[in-house]
Image 1 (tube, rainbow over the protein chains, first blue to last red):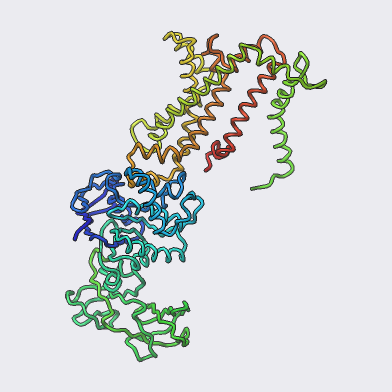
Image 2: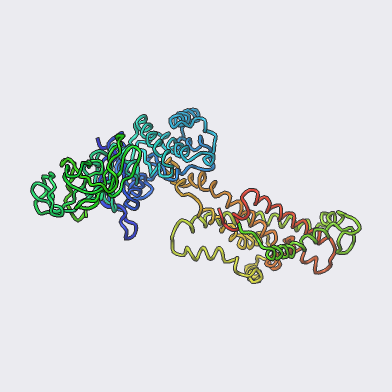
Length: 350
Length: 264
């Protein structure tokens, strides 16, 4: 059931088009991420939904109502800003209560709802602190509590975890997902971190240059990227340029078996294979011979770069407790043809 | 921070001494028991302070200056805050002109302003009115408030305002509840600086005050041209005390270097 809809939404700043022709339908209760490199228009899209930026063209509707030109204070959406945007002159409780105060919620109910919101983000004992007395992660949770306490139909998160250190970021990912599951609020999160987008979203919207280029569940996005940009932006991959033949791709005079039903023979294509889908075999035993150029031990896995006749390939293998081939040793790469992703080279994908 | 070498250190000490010595001496002279401007060598006395407080003209001028500084600093805030918001947030035709216009009293010599206002007041028949005196002081102190308000606004995280908007606050409520409290240090600092500048202003005031609205600096100037006695030193010491107290409040509350240098 379409809850929030963006129809052909565009935004131009002077001659620069930040967002073009975005069509997106989000269901109630969904957690959707807008993923892309900086400057791809994801934050502008979020701000248009929040009402902080007015679209140049297009229509945004929420629960059947057109909200394209509605003021932000009439939309009632919860927004968590990248800088958290807490009110420095108010305590945590006053920050969280602000939205309720604006809605003229009676004092007793206000106190109760603030208490609930703070306990949801596990900050009950910090109600009387000021934002400057809190750590980054705590501020972030105050910002979430403040956005959620007004029971918004949609929660908008703008790079909510980017100001946190790596360990805290990981914890907060789980925390965000836990809170979202518990409250069930439709959530849209903007991020440039593909790992973050993959781990907590129901669906990921990839944006490039103001355009939406793929909308998919995280797993499908990872396994079936629609272009070479996505395949290398979302996770790591090995890309091989070649030409499509009937039963596979011809790359550097070698025919690699793969399947891609909709591509005509002779079309230029790019093959994408993930480092973890490549297997290391003894020399001569696999599909492509090579030599170990370098190897890095990452704890849970090994990262190899292997020189082959088709170029340098990156391979990761799980740490099985045995030492793998040393640098300089001849090896062979093997893979299952089903794991070769064939991407037709189009103007958009180039 | 870099450490000063011995030469630089001596230089700084000399500069500070040169600047502070007259102030220290005038304050010491204020406590003299003698009838002439002299250092209190025979003992300390408060007789010249008593003389000031007993002098009706000086007391009238003192209160006149206090009210003048209060009104003009407050009016300057009333102009500078909306002007600062407009200049820092919107692009509109004449924006740079407006900014330059508000800051121009800093550049124009007060002597020139004084003569110009004198002529203007004579033309419109406003000579001698306290309200017009307030107007002239408001004009010369507004730049101080505007600069501090602009500095405060440029350092403001606008997403806090956006957050307030998304939480249901209208534009006016957002200003009242979020923006104003966040730039309050700039506003208060600007008000105090404006107050001090109005309270100290002499050059322009000589031209635009009337016998009924003589300010304290003008009264001192008039008095000093006729006779010099230690009462002048006592008045000076009082003025220094008031200004220093205001600066101290400013520094304690917001940090002087932050306000004057514009660091946040």
